[in-house]
Image (cartoon, rainbow, N blue to C red; front, side, top):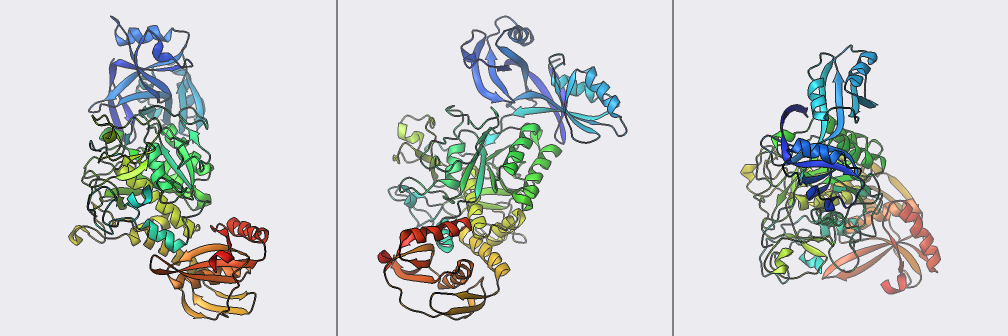
Length: 630
């Protein structure tokens, strides 16, 4: 039988057996060199190598049976296509079986033995996870047969298929001043192209408000494929990596089919190192989780891993809009679990790309109620035409559609085939170096918002995942026509284009509102009493101002353009660390700025000890020479 109907998610899939492709599990790394392999297509799909057989005069069944007899082949399986889809689909061998109410465990065991199934895990009295053994029939046929038994309520085979990577590839298709999505000045140096001034995510403004570029205690997980962890913008910040395909910390790398994870990670997290690009949250830690999968079991594992290993934010620039592959209860529960139980009960902040299909509904993963669904806007502050629309859309963020984003490039990225080599990586053919490329789609807008979420949690780590989503939506800028918004929401723009500065300000307001109190701080010279609503820097303050000698060392904890922020942080840090507050007033780019410094020490070692205390409290800081500030 070449056609099967099986349960999948909330519906059913009608599957047609491929007459060319099979899946093979083997320990032989050179499987593609075997005479029976015509072409190796993928290294990992549901744990199998996806290959095209050289079957000669054999039909696919006979050819696969012959290959299964080879010593190097552990398992061989047929490959299927769902009706109306061109994506190959492989059964992993796992089956989720829900028995009817009242069926005893003894009766359940009889059913498992009938099909030579091995019990992997009992989820409840009715739900079990089982897997096929060498004596079992094809897992799809087993699931189909089980569904006909009166003792079984449902049997869903675990299947894996390719998910869409939401990168928008333009055929024509250092460096901070070219990153218009962080701050749009109206042009890109050297590009001779006009943008709309202010059509950006206000990230650099958010850094200024924070006084730093975020906390190194926030962990951002990027779930994707193709991570180049040796890239200079990423290699120093990798934290607890995991590969779902090989079940180890050794990430799959080097396959030119998989390069997507590297630019996604860089948009969120690229470090500040004096060259190249900068991510939205350059201080945050980078948890690469490699190996996207449609499999229920792997979906559970990827989100459970993020929970267990301490991810604060989970960014996913992939998914599907094919009706055959909507989310079922198991995937929905895996996402909900992370959104509610992660971060010790505060919830992981989860983001999914809306998708690049120009559809009036979202990527099914992005439509989950616990997810921040991210669409794309352009450098002209317009809706990116490819970006999917829908009522579940949370927000949009700057990406391509007019002028692209600059992002990191994996060392094995072969780019887009084009006559002129430079156009393989850069829309305008102007070379920005071998480690970068133009990027876009909702693939780019999603990690940008993930990085902004890291800034929000840097400002206020006590926020729940729900509060972070609310802050993003509440502080977004309404772009496009006002007539497109109903009760503040647009199907094209969500609640608007993300504004990192306003979001960080709201996070600080909520934090300081919670901490607002009357504080008495002992300084080196006098008592400072402040009674204030710290969120705004308004209220009644009492200071004893005196000139600080330009010698010794202190610990810088921020630089601010707004004096209200100086008041807020002087009150907070003075009380927290029982040290005098020193404010250095200077002019930068024609604007007055205020550097806030803790303590005044005769030697560097004493300042370094305070720096360690401040850093341990989750506050970005560094020892500074007061002589150079005077």
